[in-house]
Length: 200
Image (cartoon, rainbow, N blue to C red):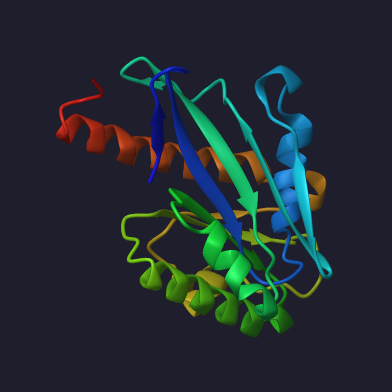
């Protein structure tokens, strides 16, 4: 759940990039960090975990607007996708507001996508988290043996969530994905704060 900082007049929202190993989660977060103006973002922190890393940083987006005069600060995380790092994922998913599930579009990676999504659902169920905004990003669309986007969404059972295509290594679709999930998170928060009578 987002946290409110009254002293800074900010609402902190947590967005986590999940998906199978080497699907492009880290590539998304690194690209965003490299493109965001330095005065509005925090340092990119990297924690090594085998072949994969957990990356995170925070920033104040310029185009998200405010909620009752409070600015929105986004905290972006990528989690290691390999099965052995389940504990790390569980920890990072605590308090999550929005999730980008980064699917590897290649046909031979579909089983890995399914396994990773199952792990994500199990983690959210364990934490009794509901109402988390979810976006599906079909990454690596530039590779030769990719499944149609509709097939990926159907195979994963994600036909009711927004689906975006991406080539994260080239920055294609990266900010479109972030914009989509952050707007969903902010719209939900706005409703919650309105229902609660606003922010004191």
